[in-house]
Image (cartoon, rainbow, N blue to C red):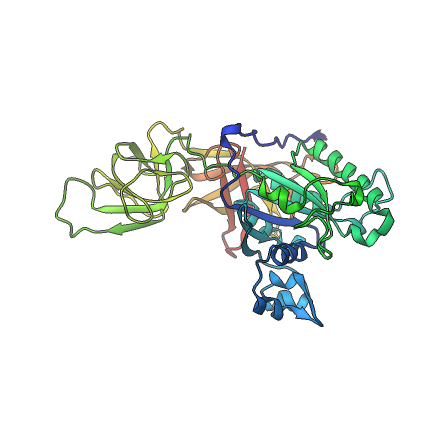
Length: 437
């Protein structure tokens, strides 16, 4: 039995939420050898963000090997592939950027998921030379579809499709771009995936990367990729939700003579809401309650701290709180032990009902048993098919039963509270990313 996919798109933010001035963190993704590393090298080179000694280190016969700006591991340079996520920083007169170069191989999908989970935007590259571009009903590569769906699932706010290597097609470039654009639009419509735009580029030659070609190349007269990135929004953290604070580190100053409040500082990054003095909080899992007596910013100065920023919280009395515990607003939803999740499975061993994994939520570890595999998503047809297991690099709906309750929210409401990492209990390898439905 198959059903149409119900992987719903993220709710669109209101106009007041858009922020186009903060640093944009984006990733490049797509299939193998689509030109992701070369594109980043071109962005760095043409935006004049490369030092002369860096340029000399990657130059051969007088020409720069653009891909090696990001391929830093010796294995990557030897094999000519991207294995781990490499981050690079650059800025223009308009904006600062943080780029994550994600690997295209299926084997390293877990690294791509890690990068996408915190990205504001994704540039999905499509290699025109690998497709049957003459066909008006052409099929996209599986990894292009997989990475696009993963970005969509992980609430990446802006997805840009960049059709690369069109310079290799000469006079047929315009026809190829039109057919590939139609295929991307069809796929996005079927997957209910919203994207920002489709742009033709040549990462090798630099066409439409930093400077837009003004001759209507490929029938395209829009802005360059960099111009598009400069205008993409950064979505603010979840400050409108009740306070949720995962404790990462406990600092003791028990030699203090002041006993009017607790004598420990609980440090971490605010997951949701705003940490401020006077709030009533409860501790998960103990259920004890207290009042916030002091909030410190990352510079240790007293101030209210919003979601997404590090804070130190002092309570009004001594309460047993350890690393991994959560401080939650007293009006937060009740913690849950039964979860329906969407899983991006990355382990070589398939996920099957009955298996037990470690689930990491914030800094808290709990045992999670797989009750049932509900559906598996066919990335080619976008149909949800009945399944009893999820093999490597597949996506599906799963029901989990937790050993202890967790303070979760749907992933569409909160990236922090709605995400868990599943870890194999024997090998300790990251096995999957679970998003609460």
